[in-house]
Length: 353
View: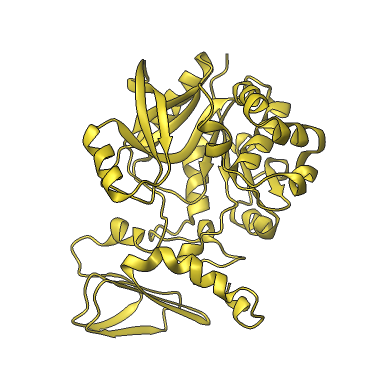
């Protein structure tokens, strides 16, 4: 059985917590946030191409709103490998539709992997080694493999995966049956999870044989699967908005977790830049910044001719992009999405989205 991987990049997200840099036509995955010169989407494609064996085996699924942007970002991607959702319905329909299309072209034994477009990976070789081990498991077992990230702290913003029964090693990496998934616990619960040593962060990356997932979707989400089989993307208007975790992963008995440690961050909001870039300096400065008595802050300006001046600031995020400026305490960056909802419906303010 061929266990070479067919990667599918999930590129339909909005990245609203990176507003105002991230906008409707320029979502987070189109941004370069680490100084590499490559956008998050381009960097994701770069590290998956070797595993795919070329552009003809790399797929992307995205929304109609930003499909042209994906084409500009990845001009080498074959048009037939770009799946365009007419409207967002979360990750369950995206994974189901893409798996159906991959199975049509590459066969139901094809090993498919799903990867968010907006993650940062520190160790590319370690990442690829982990995926090779996951593909080996998926090729030999009826397994839906998820990559669990070794938790660095008691995060309340990530989902957690509890390791169950050990199932041996693949590629010298241990694999476990999934005991349970837990969505974004409170801090006390997260601390308990960390102390046990049996929990990983849920990375949102999945590897499986196409027929394994299609069979499980037929059991646990038959209405969605049948609609997509009958109508393809034309069925989207009738589909319930649902994540793949809720639709399948929390229900299947075929979930396995492969704990991984290759340097990972989901770049969920502006605070993530501090984890990536701060080093020994007092602030993260991606702008011309003149500061007095300012520390622990993140400063970003998209125009190199603009300057940000601060006096007596601590633990704030200041972002200047075009016609919008954001000033927020680092502890409140999760509330950016709430503010954006207030901009909706106002014809003038909606231009900022």
